[in-house]
Length: 369
Image (cartoon, rainbow, N blue to C red):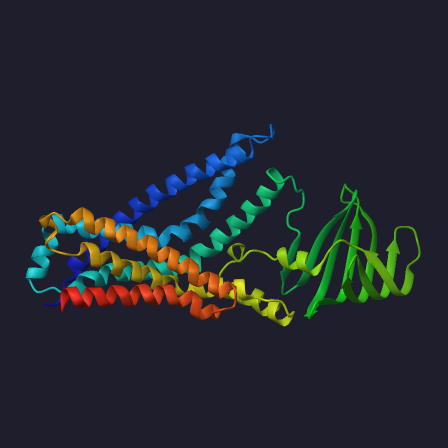
């Protein structure tokens, strides 16, 4: 029997209401726990107000929503199917000749649309707010006045370093890592005092990072009220190392979906490893499929007409346990991807494909087997 549009809308509306309720409950708990954790961390600072703590937790919330969205979808699907089964609506629908796949179609369609909107629309907002959260965390809790020690992108490399009462800003139009050496081209160094007033500026054609200093070639030293000084070679003292620079790369979560390809291209052209960024980008691409897989897993445990037999709670617990098992499995696969044991694309798509195939296999066995 062909499922009607009215029935599709009815099932989709029930699922959407359950999803909104699940997200509200889960995000409320996460916001509460994050606020408590931030209050604990700021207990030693008397000048940190409660409003600043609430703002910090609020900026982090959208990123946490993206992380828990697959579990919220699974919980919402289980709640929706259990309600429809208890009211005998699904029993009547299936007895009229509507298959499980037709019943799941409107739910999967809603999830697919939400997954695409999350990637192309909500992710840039979450990345922007999470970047602001990290900056405020550095300023409020870590007492670091610098907004970010490093920024990298198509405009080149920007580094910030504190040297006593002075701050040094390093900019290079292009950068290249060759083994353990970091080579820079078209280097600019701006040295400012603690009030952000320029003390002097250095322009160099080439630069190379050495232990304890930067080796600069073709240098022009410019000071206020002094003539420009020229040097063939110049050593600028610095505590920067290649390891520190790599550690200060922006976390992938602070970069929006639309900007990630440019960041990955720059990292690879500079000789740096972009495995974290590539893995995160591929995981964003696979997230709509992952949400659909969560619906299939939820249907395995709840889309049954015989819940009156007394095994309802066991099935619900089984679905929750399956969700946690899948979560740990995905973390293991992602760790293998970060360690380069698996290609980033394979590590990102494997959890979604495994969950989807497992759900389809179980449904085929229960429905048609």
